[in-house]
Length: 409
Ligand SMILES: Cc1cc2nc3c(=O)[nH]c(=O)nc-3n(C[C@H](O)[C@H](O)[C@H](O)COP(=O)(O)OP(=O)(O)OC[C@H]3O[C@@H](n4cnc5c(N)ncnc54)[C@H](O)[C@@H]3O)c2cc1C
Image 1 (spheres, rainbow, N blue to C red):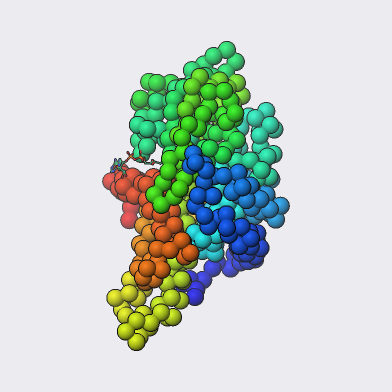
Image 2: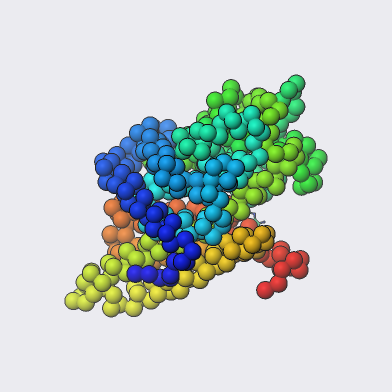
């Protein structure tokens, strides 16, 4: 079932990506079903991924790097194909639609902006680049993005992690929370206050640092267990007297907040594509199921109480896809598209979570089984109504643009 047509632009690349996912992701899941379908073997007692699972993730990343997909969105300066924002949307939509939440190793097939080569890493100094980038680009090693703190989430300017100058470098102290991939990353991009007054005035004063995670004082002391999972992906990071040389500053001192927003923008488009892709995957399953399943002598497809919500979601997902593509094209044209990024991320993730919820209902009790993984898809989307700019913060951004007269409807 095709809810909408794919753009002709990237058909060949997307066909190749689909073939890669079938050969390297779905097949790997089937070979390792005993491991991957057992939550207590996916995570260890501390909530981290087990070494066996980490190895499978690494295999997907490195196979994808060799096949040319891992770096398809990464900058040319890192050997990437820099295909742009429309390609970003289409690639991630394809991954989530093909793999759903069942074949989740596919979520590692293209470098994600917080975990792999991204435009943020273009700001690494030549020395740090030479030391760390080759293993990140090959998919062997990964990164994390450490911005949020216990008292600084939506309002990131409130961060308390401090970096103070020392001879030849900086010393960092503080605590970061909700940091995806922190427990497995080799290099962390850490944001810290370097000028208290400027940060308090929300005019700079925050600097980004490249911190190798084996630096003394860098400790992921806990991985937060999330709803429905035996472990988690988000770590709490303690920075206790972490010392890094001057050349580990990313970009310019005091310019970290601007760099963070560059990354967050990519995250908003990524999450919009995730909403559309997972929704299409779930709706396709539901449409197939209601045509097979019979109750009271009729196919469930004949009950409009179940099928009208699916039609409702088909409308919403089609609209979300167009909003996401429009946003991506504006970014490709060099426009800031702040309002479109907020609209695309909020609308697509909310529509996606509703679509998955409706697909679960259409499946009856089957909708909650690990076998179908619909609940995992719902969880993955429900949590991004908070991550990367919550639904409320995105509405705030839209309104600010409209009320300030920067944009009109
Ligand atoms: C799955 C997941 C992965 C994450 N990964 C990372 C990561 O890799 N790196 C990282 O740095 N952070 C990460 N985060 C953290 C994320 O960025 C924060 O959770 C987010 O910024 C919200 O902050 P908070 O959770 O502290 O909520 P709060 O900021 O405390 O907000 C609480 C509630 O109040 C609402 N609210 C807050 N301010 C306003 C306002 N002005 N108007 C209206 N409503 C408001 C919020 O929308 C929310 O519903 C992740 C979070 C999740 C859930």
